[in-house]
Amino acid sequence: MRVLLLGSGGREHAIAWKISQSSILDELFIAPGNAGTKKLGKNLNIQVNDFESIKNVVLQNQINMVVVGPEEPLVMGIYDFFKNDTQLKNISLIGPSKEGAQLEGSKDFAKAFMSRHRIPTAKYATFEANTLTEGLRFLDAMKGPYVLKADGLAAGKGVLIIDDLNQAKKELEEMLLGSKFGQASSRVVIEQFLDGLELSVFAITDGESFKLLPEAKDYKRIGEGDTGLNTGGMGAISPVPFADAAFMDKVLNRIVIPTIKGLKAENITYEGFVFFGLINVKGDPYVIEYNCRMGDPETEVVMPRIKSDILDLFEGVATHTLSERDIQFHDKSAATIMMVAGGYPEAYNKGETIYGLNSITESLVFHAATLSDGPSVVSNGGRVLAVTSYGKNLQMALERSYESITKISFQDAYYRTDIGKDVLDK
Ligand code: AMP
Ligand code: GLY
Image 1 (spheres, rainbow, N blue to C red):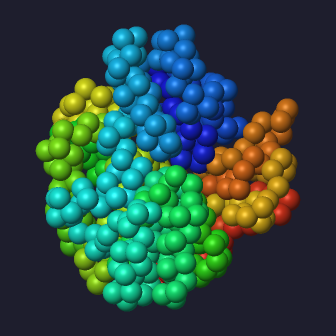
Image 2: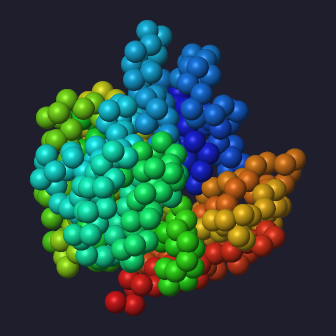
């Protein structure tokens, strides 16, 4: 099989790493990729939202399957672009249709979908500029903290959690009238605050059946002890200790099965990953958000824990034969630590030379934002590298990653030293 993978982050390096081990792979292309994916296939200098250029390289390189990493091309409708094009329609595309991607692309769509299918989630209401007064009254009637969500994609920044009522009202006004998040906040979902530990659960579906992938927990805040600004994710672990069989049974029966069945019942085409962002409230799972793609950095621990051939599973998705395929996991635990540029998630430098990459033997280093510069590898974004290790248990996996990370350096590099600590201490 000739495969094109879209994206350039740690998630895509981890997916590329897994695809490159497939017995049915002939050639792997990555667009645009990074200095890490370059070692596993051929990087193509094309952006993920440039559908016409993607079409050209797919035809030029006789690609049979396109795997979409990030959400943007999915929400923009890359699935429909392929299926509506006479030259592309028979090429497999792993990802949901534009309508399916609305599970991530519109918080209001996702909440209404959950409410139609009785999937547990926080109580909510949606407001627009012309219903601002009702929105303010709705806040008056609630208890804090107040959760305000921009309806559309806002690069992970569109959720505000505010303790003070007056501040929440001010923010609602800025979102609806002041376009705080541009078009994305022309509608705002206000929802009940849920208190508990979060985890990420992943499924892959062909629209009929699905397979659960290993679950993971990511660490979103920049600072130790989950403090400071939100980031794309500073580390991840898998498995998740509190996600025991009884809890996962609830996740399956109350959330995953109703979601897949609901998509089918509503004739929403979905041939890809579903990411369930969940919260454990006193032993019961609730959906915080859906994403229409894998998580980052969760993928950097999920892919290493899958034993089966990933292209066999993707083929099952594309040919609607997923139920006939087998998925097996490694018993081993996996942990990943993100090395980021100092200053991230605010201003930071790019182009810093990275040292020590070749000295790592006990861990997998997934590149999250790197470029080749002659023989050197340089940083090219905020989250630069994800250092993943296996271990007999989480403790050992974490120790190994922390040992490896001391051998890698670049100017002003930063990482959290407490990934996994909250769940191991329990
Ligand atoms: P989202 O972009 O929907 O994942 O939201 C970002 C983060 O905000 C989540 O990972 C949670 O930590 C937090 N969050 C979102 N919704 C709620 C809620 N209803 N209650 C508590 N925390 C929430
Ligand atoms: N790690 C969370 C996400 O990928 O959205």
